[in-house]
View 1 (tube, rainbow, N blue to C red):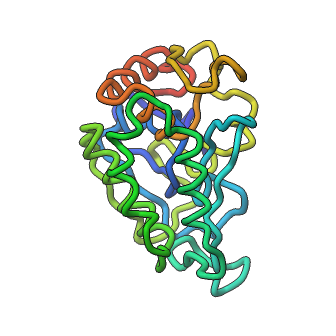
View 2 (cartoon, one colour; view 1 turned 90 degrees about the horizontal axis):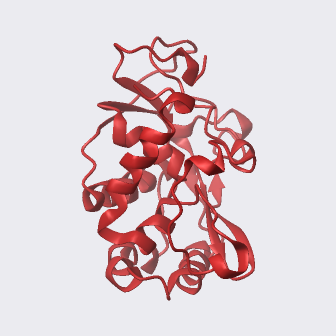
Length: 228
């Protein structure tokens, strides 16, 4: 079951946990009243659950949080740990700073994000994602209520986006690139405008207008994304 199951009377939707997710993920947060974060699925590989996509001088770069799965490929999301074998937090922060140090609002918002990268994060990946996401939502002034699932349901009545938002679809410009209002990006003169990157790309470039941008993009993508 996918986002196409959305009905006008349902204001709750299911999303995966996500690390600095792409803008299409954020559009649902702007519109939904309640979001259920899935913690009881079997952890899938190569998703936004532990990666984000940013634009650098050399092009697109995926930043991946290494994880440890105590039960191997049968590990559920709730039990997936952040791996402590790599200094990934330093590499991520260096990449973010290099990519966005010249963005208009980097100096203002870098202090918001830096604490998440000063010391090696540990514990469950979903808890790290939750704290990071809540920090961003508070700053952007998005008030969607978040709860976590307590058990896995294969079929649900509300919009199911647990497998809908993936890097594979993202690479196909899903939603359509022309449905994203262009905004200034540091490397647009080299790579052109790149839509639907990580939320931090938008935040560093448009600052306090981030929520307004997301609301406008949600209107443009309403039919395709089944946003009510």
